[in-house]
Amino acid sequence: MPRPASVWLVLFLLAVITTGADARRHPPKRTVHPSTATHKERLSKEAQLAKLKKEIAETERQLNEHTRREKLTKKQLAERDARTKKLKAKLVALKAEATELQSEEKELDTSIKTTASTIDTLKRNYADDASRRYVSGLYRASVTTGSGFDDPAEEAARRRNTYYSSIAATALHRNKQTLDSTKTSLTENREEVASMLNEQLGAISQTTEEQHSVEAERAKKAKELQTIQQKKASLQKELERRKQSAKRLEAIIVNLAAKEEAEIKRKKEALRKRELARKSKVKAGKKLTVQERHQEAADTEEKKSLAGPHSLGWPCSSHRIVQGYGEQRNKELGTVTMNLGIDIGTAEGSAVHAAEKGTVALVSSLPSYGSLVIVRHSGGVLTVYAGLESISVSSGSAVSKGSTIGKSGTSSELGAILHFEVWKGRSKQNPMGWLNK
Image (cartoon, rainbow, N blue to C red; front, side, top):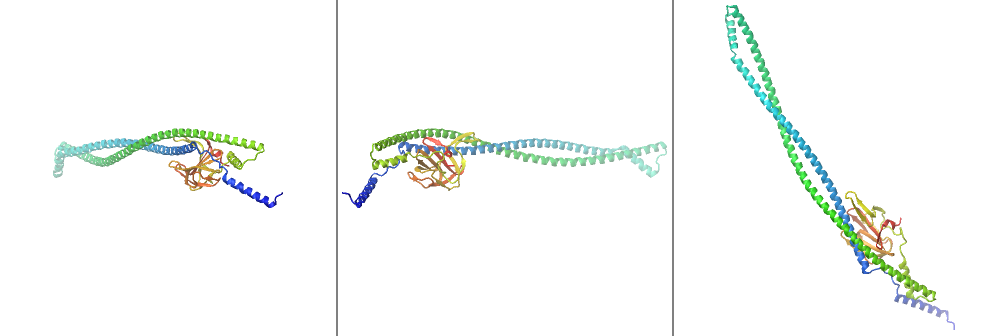
């Protein structure tokens, strides 16, 4: 007997309710990415590696600073050496000039003494001249008694003596004037030389003090240079040690990633077997159970992966690259470091977005790396966001593409930036090959 339409409707509703209840009893299995001890250990080692990379960058920054200070100190030392050399040359010249002035001063003293002695001799000679007294007597006699001589010969002799006496007196007078003038000139020259010598000795004293000051500064700078060079050598050793540690840690990460890939491979094999089982059942005309349908949906989600190159969204609004991926050469130090990601210049406090939907694998704050977030995406892809000012997600939470996970911060070396990395399994990737254009 055919059933009324209302009965069919009731049966249909019951089937729907039953199916819903069954679905509640057997909810779809969520895609669970590897969360084994290996995976957790890999994430821990990656965090350690990130910390090491940051420490390497900080050590290189300190090396740069010490290299700059070393160059500046060497320049200052060279300037002081040049100044000391000039001061020494100046002192030699000043002392030579002072020696000449002292010699000239002695010569002038000798000349002044000789001139004074000559003047005294002339005075004595003039005062003791017998002929002058004789002629003076004859002259007085001739004036008082007329000629004073009856004999013409005596008169002639008297006149000759008077003439000679007059010439001698005039010569003595002129010589005395000349010598007096010479003495005055010599005395003036001597005073001028003495003044110049005093100035020269003052300049020598001042230059000597300046030389001592410059030499003291040089000794201080030389000690400072020695300290800088010792610190620089220590930093270079520390940099090499950290590089070696980073290499070892990276090798550990690669090993852990290999183990994780093996686990993923095992899961893929299990997924393939389930697919074959489902296809075989459908081919045999059998219907899949509700649980099998849910598993099929979960397996489909598991197989999804990123579309490939240039499929990730930019983690911030800025696209300005401050430092690119790969080797970074320091010309001053002659060192080469590896940047595992890119550094994007963006204003401090800018929103940081998830590059693709996924699950937050790690939230951490490392002293040398800043606050960071690692997001795991399907297909074994990890994205790293470092140097954050603040974080707005927690470990284990799901994020959608473009959702905000935090705000950007600053770097002591590069300024306001966001550090961004991409990993696929154990292989580090150039983020520029993954970011959309």
